[in-house]
Image (cartoon, rainbow, N blue to C red):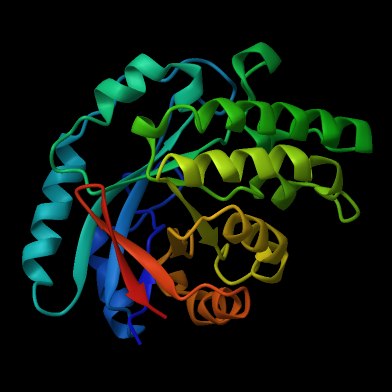
Length: 264
């Protein structure tokens, strides 16, 4: 089985500490065939201020070294998780024009600048009203993101804010919005990811996957969102089983933004 992990972070992400070499060693040990490094760049900081320009040099150096070291053992791809493209599309286009880039996860970790710009991690989520206000803003930003197909290859962790919200908060009131987002992603030749959250979140993806497929979507990656070597690949086999159950026949890998489908 061709297992892949297309959402991983190294010490070049602000919330991770390990070099790509160690993440790749863990991937090979876990029996993965392909690993994509997708270190963070968010256009807004944790508190909602504007982030400075991204320096590609350390990421390229790390990738080139590890790609050479693991040649013949593990296919490595060079990606990025870009957060907040709708907030500054011109900078996103400029940054993501890097020729060496294989893959872009289009994510939204922050509220819109109009809503203060703070990371969803920061809350507050003490009441249902606070939760749904955050989700309103989140899906409004995602509706803008899908109109920027040049700024992403797959939509990142569509159900992301639920990680931080209490049980009982659901997406029931958002399915029409989500349907429109998924339809537009499929129309523009873009995909989505099934983010296992290191094996913690798999079953909740079923309604999203079923809707994406109903709208003609076929391009889908699987990623663990691992920030530690021991978490690389967690939940990937289970994610493959869920994809099969939802009628998918392939997972997708990318080289220079060109998708290639691998039979499940």
